[in-house]
Amino acid sequence: MRELAAFLWQRRGEILALTGEHVLLVAAAAAIAVAAGVPLGVALARRPGLARPVLGFANAVQAIPSLALFGFLIPVPFIGGIGARTAIVALVVYSLLPILRNTHAGILGVDPAVVEAADGIGMTRGERLRLVELPLAFPVVLAGIRVAVVVGVGLATIAAAIGAGGLGVLIYRGVATVDHRLILAGALPAAALALAFDFGLGAIERRLGPQR
Amino acid sequence: MKPWAEFNRLAAPVLEYAGIRKGFGAGRPVLDGFTLTVSGGETVALVGPSGCGKTTALKLANRLLDADAGGVRIFGLPAAEHDAIALRRRVGYVIQEGGLFPHWTVRENVEAVPRLLGWPEDRRRARAGELLAMMGLAPETFAGRRPAALSGGQRQRVGVARALAAGPPLVLMDEPFGALDPIARRAMQKEFVVWRARFEAAVLIVTHDLREAFLLADRVAVLEGGRVRQVGTREELTRAPADAFVREFVSEFGA
Image: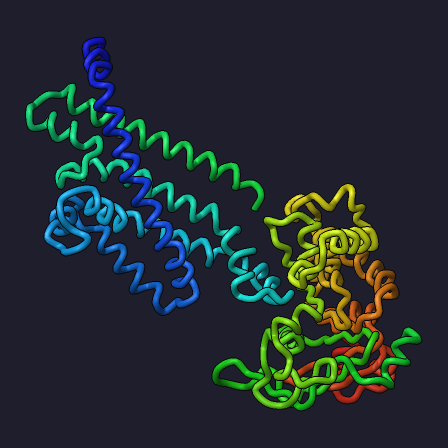
């Protein structure tokens, strides 16, 4: 145990730098997934006929093994190749579903009487969305973002396989050299990161909870 | 009937339905040959068994719905010529349980329409304070609360205050006291008569409770089979029911 701590301390510079890369990968993917998933989720809530096929498709995409998806993306022009860009594209694909699904469910979950009141007092569709539906759906949307981020932290370790950097670098190196300390040097910070994101976003969720 | 109501009756009616047909999908239309006029300042209650189209009729008056055939005129103008959004901001709307925005405070709820209309903040505040006080909700105590922290009756009062905030000439109420327990309901009905005298808007109120209709309204319209069977005061309906349905309806529910 003490030996492991000394090992981690000795490598702290590298671990910290890779943790930074890791956070950047996850944050960039989450930001893109939110920017795409929330508007798309709202659009699906308005078009019930479209919701089922689109959510079904997103579900199916989610089922692709992640290592395979990373591999598939490498030869794709513009979004593919070796490096962080490809990894972010793959992480966005996986983050999209929980955000999409929760936005859709959150908007549809707003009390119909409240929606009727918004229409009845003369809100335009845009005002209704901005002032009533999105604020009320926000805790549910945030829960989706939380799932996407926590899953993304784990998935991003695999991104090292295609040269995207992050904590996966240490894990792969550890596996290749059969060095448990090196594997843990990647895995422990990744787990801590997932827990920290989960806790942080959970705290925001709880703070927004009671006002509903 | 209030004196101004008598006066306004000679002027243009606020709301006129003429030969309305409105259906949803296949089957018999909900409203068929629905005709009713609401004059300035009067209170009209629309009563009838559940599913008779009361709420549908109400929603035609602020263009939440549009008629399939026949004409609705609001403030003397055909419904289709009104911009739906602008119209709804000029027509107060109260629904069961108030339909308050749960993420907004009482004050924000009451200020909703003035805010949409772009009133300056001090004018909005003053108006909200005045209305809350009129509804018996001291602004110092209630303005900052959220709807979840109110009783059913208090929520309903806030709903009424929100509907009146921009001084609409017409207020629509859909079973406004329907979600309250009998005791709170009685109290609200008594209060309604008091606040009613303080604003001059015409009110169209939908209820399934004939006793409530007689208590609150100047005239009561009995709706059945998609059309108004009879409109009149309590006395007219009980003394001279127009047909067998009205006779039975009045004798069953009326005191």
